[in-house]
Image (tube, rainbow, N blue to C red):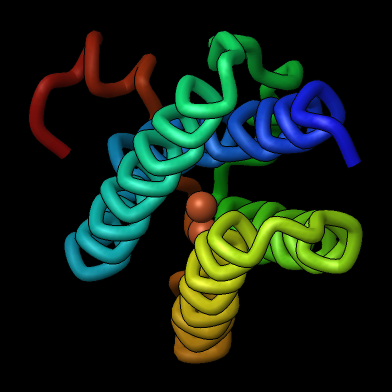
Length: 155
Ligand SMILES: [Fe+2]
Ligand SMILES: [Fe+2]
């Protein structure tokens, strides 16, 4: 496989990382439950490290790291919907990294993608745990939204 093909794959991975960062930061701000917000923030920071490693690798291969991301899906901003979406993003990432690990021969890049994929597996577990730990009543309460932050101040 030529460098160009590898760059294409890594840029697809970067696109996913940017989508995850933006989604988790948004969820962190609106989720309204401190402990879950902190988890979202920590995981977003992990994704920023992934973005950096992948971008450095693209540059090393002579490519230009993308700054594109998929259209953000921010519907359904109650806490369970957010956590389900986050679990889904991690699942997509795990599948894509596995495909790319299988497709790419370069041992160094394979190692990097495996390291990232293992962190995505941990993220998926963390988000799933948070989702499973949600008490029934919290799951049904409306969430603090950006709108109510602007209008109401404290809640
Ligand atoms: Fe990541
Ligand atoms: Fe992740």
